[in-house]
Length: 303
Image 1 (cartoon, rainbow, N blue to C red):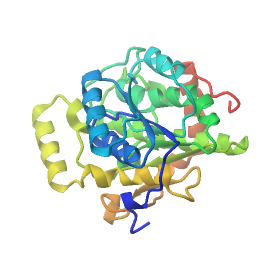
Image 2 (image 1 turned 45 degrees about the vertical axis):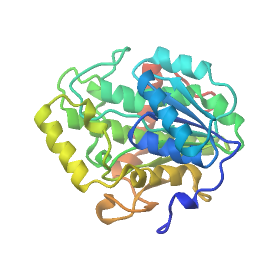
Image 3 (image 1 turned 90 degrees about the vertical axis):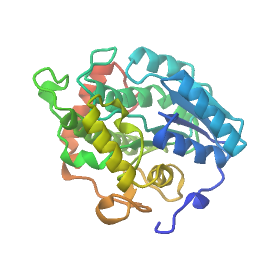
Image 4 (image 1 turned 30 degrees about the vertical axis):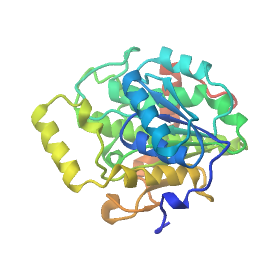
């Protein structure tokens, strides 16, 4: 893996990839590469104007016209259900990439705390609703993008809506831990039922993206933005762990990939070890049950 690069990715002609948050940052970089390798890429974006700009760029830079914009708002279960209902044909790769970070206290259309609602519950619901399309593919993969921030996370089951207290970074850490707990529980269930589909996780390390744009504190935003620009690796490098998890031969369900440099901050993708709380099966099962109850989405054959 130490020499892994875009050139290492095999031809993806004949495969379909759905990428959430594909209009910018890691989602855009991931979509560019998948399209360049011949995949049909469905850009799942909330903002139509920005999505159209991304679609034009990807088609122009890669020469692949099989790149399609599909509107998806992960802060709305209605939007997620509509997106899944309109899915036509199998999905070989589902890249659960979109996210918000350290936003002010807001809620989704369904009343969920925004970061937990978008980063975890939205992707949980989307994956469950796309499960029939994933099962139609011969060997599909679901790659969920977490973060180093999961190390500081814990699941506050007593206050998931953050009604008692809201601290932006605490809630972000929780949502990124939830991404891993979901991935590992999903894989346990897939394996127990003999499914060919696998669930994998990745994180980009310290990467210069626009994830801080959801913050509304100008001073903090300026400081963080400068910090990311100065020390963060490029989006192209930050997307490599996701691309490895999605396309490399030999990847197994339940694995977690991130940069191989010091502190996993930057570098080529390697297999990494999550924080201990991400490996707790009891917490994972409880989170799965709570997520099912909150979203109303079940995973047929896996419950």
